[in-house]
Image 1: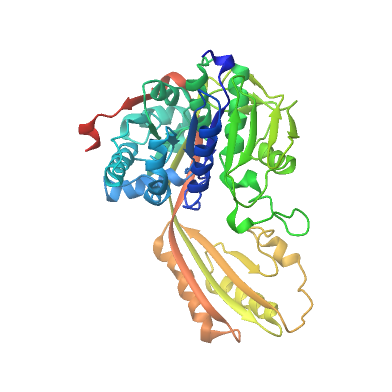
Image 2: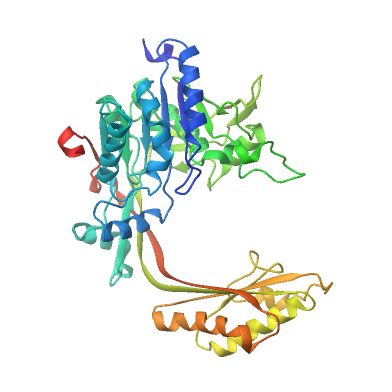
Length: 466
């Protein structure tokens, strides 16, 4: 069957970040199995999991430091075990970035899981080359970042690599592909390249598939999750919101829907919101695979329910460099909270903040009055200082949150002590104190030439998976 006559490729997404719902994959897999059973000959289906954010890899590297067998997605078992056997039995291939800082350990875990489920040993590939954290790459990072990298305690450094090694692994027969840091849309572009046989310079098709992947990558967002706003943008059944499934044709055009028998909705509005999510320039959405162009894109609801078509996407020559995120140790974040309720609650919370500012002289405090001003406040406190108190009804509660950062742990710990002391040192009626001290991670970004980041895949044998 030639590429133009191949039926649309089905790609379902079962996670939009690390910490997403672990029961999301079941309805997606059920729907993919049903569509394969009733679909045309030659139709294929993939299940993708997107579980990395900008600093997730740094946290994974810290876990790997403590345990060389860790460093991959901590919810891997909970996410994948319920559906792994069914995917393998029905030919649904799995592509994910839940390898994080340790793709090989994740691959071994998946192989062990398959054995425990009584499935045949799956063919598992790992994609590598993104991890630039070790000392061997320090000179490369210094060339890109300059003097600012000197003296940094680097935790992780990872390039956002693309779809080509995923496609190559699938072409080699992999049933499961485990990646570290690949660009989110590439999880969908790789399967499309392998299935339809696209070249790596087929820019328009790659651009369209990239935006299909972009619609999928955040899981339930495109199905009404992050869209919901009661009375303004109502979403039915949000407690059981479905996760998305894309149909991608041989030219890269896509239709977005969701898992059957789930809540949420897929509409022109939900697709438009997700299409524009994190896109700074609609004419040049940069990815390692292609520069996608949605300047003339069209979104159109199709007959039936929860089916929306995206068309008009174009693609341009991919960037010559990879984006690299470098996370490094950044001292300590101290936080403390205390609540005030009843008459003059906000006045007492403001007085408590003033007490802390004077007691913690030398620490730059971030002050939030949750219930009065927090999200829209600024670190310097100008907005809070200029905002008059909300008229007192006697029926309010306000939670004071203060935070500070410092390189010295002992200095940061002062904040927790002072917030706790407010219990009896005043003002009146404070309660529910909580404090936390967290190691802080800072991030730098740079660009590296593609040729300096050698990406590869390896189809692991039984010995490597033991």
